[in-house]
Image (cartoon, rainbow over all chains, first blue to last red; front, side):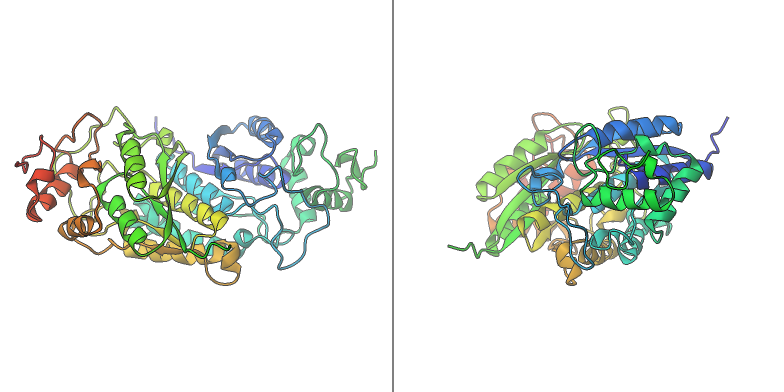
Length: 231
Length: 231
């Protein structure tokens, strides 16, 4: 019997966005391999959560070690730098930017996709709330598609795996709605830049997430430390 | 005192080509960080040789673990597949192709370059003798430059690190001449697809290298198992 199910590799950080992408891709009928990285981040709560989310959606899950955090230069990997809590600004790259992280993660995902015959690589990047990151822009994604089409065996025939970023142009509130729609266990996802037992509620990632949860009518899904928390 | 020396990241496999690129880049006056990978290859002779070559050229050397070999699909990482010895063919991807390897290596090199402020990422890829590899083509490199220009902090100002592939259009004989010219210790480099104490002399990589060494007038620099060996 030949396995005719379409395959996809889904980059899964364990946060709200990438968990939503996994849910959406599973719902589209893809057999998914979720891919997470131990890249030198300050905490690995998100990896445990990624495993939980993958299991919930019946997806394979692989964790790859690639210590780009040792190169330095980011508040997400360098204990000596503070995680920002002051809100994001248009056109300013936040200190949580990890040099080249998305480029590395997508490269590894394309490698895995080619090895297992996956036709899609799915990403949770979003250009609206994280506009300060150079590697979350639509033109970045388009350039990577051109590269993918040239890079692989399939690329010799003109087409590599298709980079798919369903959240790219969505607002955070719409992402929350999509997450609820596909059954993401939102309480299990971890978006906080800090480790700890509960999300800090005050880092930029918590603030963006919790504000959207409240706006979508679900303040009870924010962490107890959030100013938006109710219930 | 401010360090004004230009910096470069050089991908160094420990083979003849990448060692030549390191020599050329050092000669151009760059402070080099050589970058090698433990990616699941069958043997790590090349990593020891890379360390030796880096030391010889007074370059820093970093080895990064990224096990894309575990994804399967290549004779260079899969013990169950044979290393080919029959010669390469135009337009046919050899079984030594590792899916996405160059894309991953260059992504990590760009990440390191951004973190340490290097203005160049230097590569030993060559489109002449390895024409079967999709990720050794000039159009692949051009697409990667476009991506690099969009991906990084510097890219927000329109320019990432410059991908530099000085051997791209050179014949293997010309590479041998360049290697001798910049003082590469050719006997210390390792190009063989196999492990072992001496190069096998019969895999495609040995054959291409040894033929060029002989043509350049240095059959004594081939391994004792080579049909070209003299001296």
